Length: 367
Image (cartoon, rainbow, N blue to C red; front, side, top):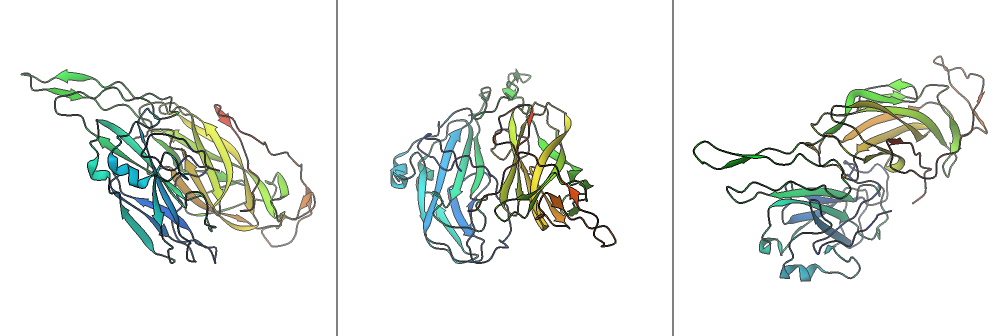
């Protein structure tokens, strides 16, 4: 479910439970899979790609702009009027035609050349299939984000940047000093956090493994079975080692865990500058192989030094049955069945509130 904000005129997307997009073609047949496309830094060029296995219906792409530290704050120009759609208030809206599998629709924002950007940093959120009108094989990758920084005029020190949205880790106030001989001023770079996971920082079902490899859930590590509409999911205790390698505290942020494109788990925490920490979470997974993706700061709450080290992938293999009634039939390494072990049923938390560390496992739902 997306949370919309009626912000400045140049608006788009909103925060979703799954922000940054999973890449690569969909493995589920018979459905489209739409992802938004932009440039870095942000420019007039935007678009939508259908990376699914079927053609998509016509839809809409929306673009939202917020200046750092504000809800809205982006320049408004006459050309924006052509992009107003009452169905998507506060956002620039672009109609998108039907797209064949693998096709891309490109559009240049006609008003972009009219904009005179005041100094500052601007954040953009693009949503493909705005309004969720198109059934897709992956509903978690419709939003992407970009930014644009406009430098101040020569010889003018930039003002201290404000927190973006809910960020509480305020950047270091810019300091300026005069050059010898009155040659001008130099502004110090603001301190920023940088969130990432360690190279060998994932334990899932008792198995530790590097990213982009296979982790096998070990017998005896399941805490609940018969989850999900098909009652074929197991709840697996897991943990990940996160760290803040930047030079400022992060403030509160969220990370999310996906299994085969489905949002499974949400965690809330914060990391001080230089802090390393193991974070526990419960992961519902299917019998067989699961493509698990972990996304740090998926709501883009933290202004980081690097934004390209926040997504981690692993394959999780469940080699036994999750359908048993209060029991799980486990397989030994020799292939012989071991005696069923009665499992303690636990109640999954229904809600999660931001805290130092808060665990939340989501029951899978059907689209």
